[in-house]
Length: 168
Length: 215
View 1 (cartoon, rainbow over the protein chains, first blue to last red):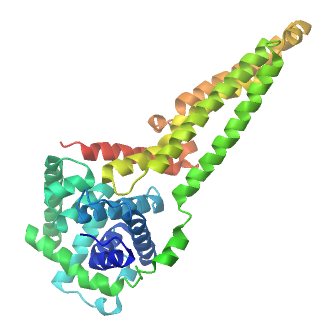
View 2: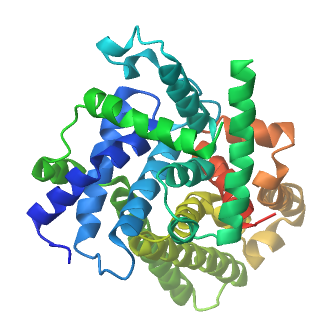
View 3: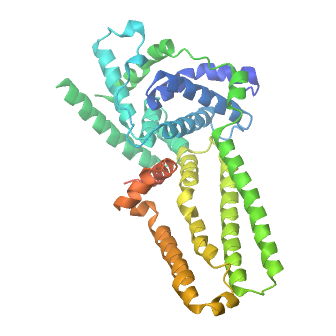
């Protein structure tokens, strides 16, 4: 049972803050935009929280709100040509600058790839990597499970190619 | 690259993001104040003002028609057409307001984004408002005016109205995203900052449709 007061909301927000960060990181090119988006998502979640009626799972509801806000925010702040493909240096913290480990490189490649995807494919991939079931992804996005499976498979193929190109 | 590795990499970001994102998600009161005037609410308010002004304008035109008592058919038909097109615009704007009010971020991504994109793209659909232009060149015509100088009427008034009619129909038919391949349309629309989000919205609507179709 979800506690529908401010404390209950703050607890849920704390529990899910990492996914909000990841969504912001995937849809925004710079730190300032990420902060704005995180606030916008928090605000919209809080605003919609009163109307959450439990007809869908809390996580489904939360992903819908967060991704809808992120896509809308992303589209508002983009001009025709400004789809940023590389993470900017200001996304890195002081202690991560010299970190050139294999894992770090792979994380950056994965993040770069996610950033390059179109808005809806990006949402799909985030949900897949968050280990949501195909049925929940289909409910969040409003597409069929078959479509979810087909699209994920295509994106993964591209991703594999990308990693193999980089590693060779 | 295996699935498991991808998911591991995705998870590996957690700590890094938690360290680098310092914003405070929890100052709800200040967020509420900051966001009390959301952009969509602003848009709805703008459209509401337009609807009120439109209704006042349509009423004024109605009063003019009523006052004329069909004494001058040119006036009645011209003002009547302007009034009809204004009413059409009012209806379109009321539908936009309803669409804004109906917008719910907790609905599925494709449904919500489609509604938003439709709202942005609606400017193209509202270009029918252009069609009232020729009637502004005919409302002052009268039988007396024509009879007093047929030549002047035929050489000045009629060509002006014809020019307006041709220009308006041409603009109506061409100012659409479907004609973006034409240089002048592309130039006109791409250089109009108000049209850029509309064009992007049209493209996004196509993307949503494509996304929804399994192939």
